[in-house]
Amino acid sequence: MSTESWKTAYRSFYYEQAPLPQDPVLLAAKTALLVIDVQNVYLVQPEDPQERDRWQGFIDRMHQTVIPNIERLIQRCRGESINVLYARIACQTSDGRERSLSQKKPGFNNLLLPKDQWQSQIVPELAPQDDDIEVLKTTDSALTGTNLRLILHNMGIEHVICTGIFTDQCVSSTVRSLADESFDVVLCHDACAAATDALHEHELRVLNWIYCQVASTDETLSFIK
Image (cartoon, rainbow, N blue to C red; front, top):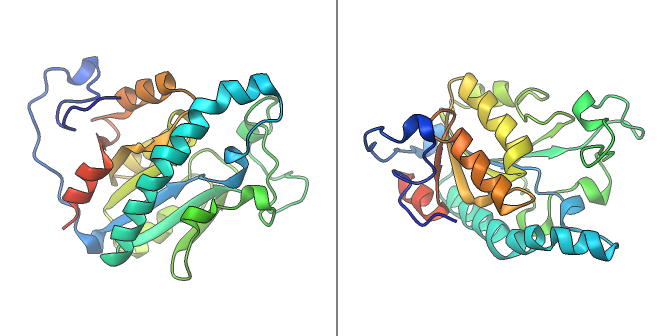
């Protein structure tokens, strides 16, 4: 994990020679925090010992780093009257027939998560409060499959702080969609995770500077004005 400043860390080939930027200014009235897919289903330890070993690094990172940092961001944002939004994978039907193709293919992404099941809920540590906004999606991008775009525009949001899982899947898809809609995105590298650190680090370099600015939670908190 990089300990460099956001101004120099996670630079891909395309931006190795780019000049140092100014710190972002995240005005509370124009900023939203988005928590992506931090749901119970992903924090359950696999029963199979081999699978448990494969996923242990991810589980540890979530409990030790990602969830605590998202908690810090939520607490600060609520204190600054910054809108806190959640996206979660959840289908409206019991058989999930309305899911997008990406969530029907065999394998890891074949998720059947009806909206009222425990597995589909946000983890208790980060549970939405009464005035928070939650959108349900059956797509990778939280913008493509919901009315999130309209919600953000209606609230006058220009800057979106993104957190959650998985960095290389739903987080990446959401960040790209937000950037294409001209939202300014800050992605907190220590408040998100992929299945492995290698996948996480690679995707951060792919996204950084083009679709978002990658920064730590501490740096992001310092950007809020």
